Image 1 (cartoon, helix red, strand yellow):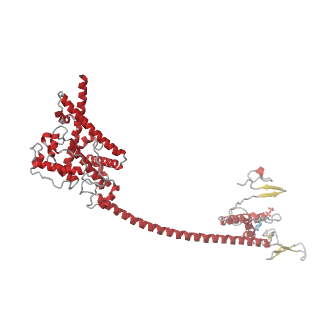
Image 2 (cartoon, rainbow, N blue to C red):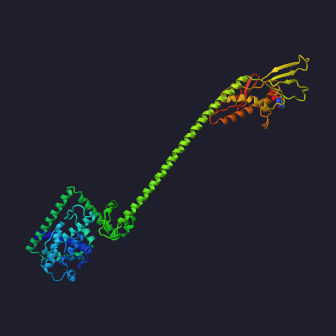
Image 3 (cartoon, rainbow, N blue to C red):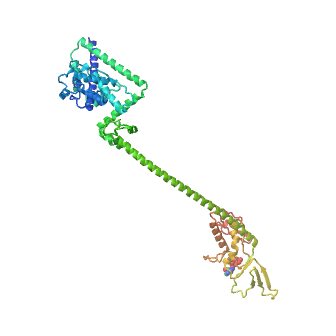
Length: 538
Ligand SMILES: Nc1ncnc2c1ncn2[C@@H]1O[C@H](COP(=O)(O)OP(=O)(O)OP(=O)(O)O)[C@@H](O)[C@H]1O
């Protein structure tokens, strides 16, 4: 007895859920009908009786299918008493009226492969629990067909999806129809009338079992069909499903959160009347649009897609013009750069040739210079006559020749024997300056820079002027520099002139030879002054 009670409870819960789902689908169908056709004059959560009654005339259904598929029902029987369509609880219409409309609707629905229902459903006496289910199925299938048509533009073959896969979930139904299934709503479900909370008779239980088994069998058949179509790799169905899903989601986002339209590009591609948005890559299809309205838009009339395409084409043409001008400019710059490079190359070649010629001439000059020095003699002897001091009564120099001859007179000897003739490379008189003496030795000093060894030394008795000639009188004055300083200055000057083509290293060493001892005069350490020197070059 107790098991029987539990079993009945399960059956009751199952039937309750079945009825709840049917009610939610009916609310969804009602919501869509009101949005698409106009007010039906019934509540947003109608009972089956309300729902069937408002559709009884077939007028709403014919208008609905004509809107989805224009011309489906060529002739719709008008209702001359509008109140009859609004007041669902009115007297039944004449049978010929609704039967003609309903019959035409069913023919059109069959053409679209929509699920059929029996026209007798709309007879008032037949309204009972579950009688509107097939009508609801047909309307929701028509809704699915409409969405498919909006998405694809009617291109391709529509395959009905008559399963819960296409049917929005329970939560989605609640969201779309704005229904909060609370306890009040539950109470409004007609299940409360069909299944009174009193104990059921065996006959009623059997009838209920039959209904449940039939419903489950239908669902299983639908699911099998759809699973088959998905498993067959029908990518169009999958794509269609995803597109419908994304479209619905986007529609909900726009409805609930207008701030999502802040993206300007998105605003341009979406009309203001909450019609569906399409991906930008599909806008190319708009070229074939005759009425300049995107086929992907749910509602015709307001569509900014064409404007967007025109603007983008304009921008594209501007970019093309800009690209062409930039390309021309780039080509001009490229040709100019090439000519500049060619000119620069020619100049470098000229300079290179000039440098080669310069080096060649320099080499010839050096060769000639050293040849002249050779011709003048590798060993030259110059004579410089120091001015006489006051103590010296009379000079002994009798004659100084331009060819380097010198005649001196010995005052102690007779006139003829007292004359002595000497031959030098050149004789500098007592009036000759330091510069005069250096001018003649300068070419020899310069031969050092070309790799020749040169040695200049002074020879004479004490007080004859060796130090004066070689190092100058000393002091701060630079006017009477000796040959040493003047030669070094000239070497530095020459090194600086040739710094681009030659690098010279100049070292100075000063030694003294006294009493057969050689001493380094520049050594810092007095102990290291004696020969052999330890010379450390940097
Ligand atoms: N051409 C000259 N013009 C003027 N003064 C000179 C000239 N040559 C030498 N004298 C002077 O003569 C003096 C002696 O010269 P200096 O010291 O150069 O001789 P020295 O040959 O080096 O002697 P020592 O061998 O003893 O060193 C110095 O006072 C110097 O200034």
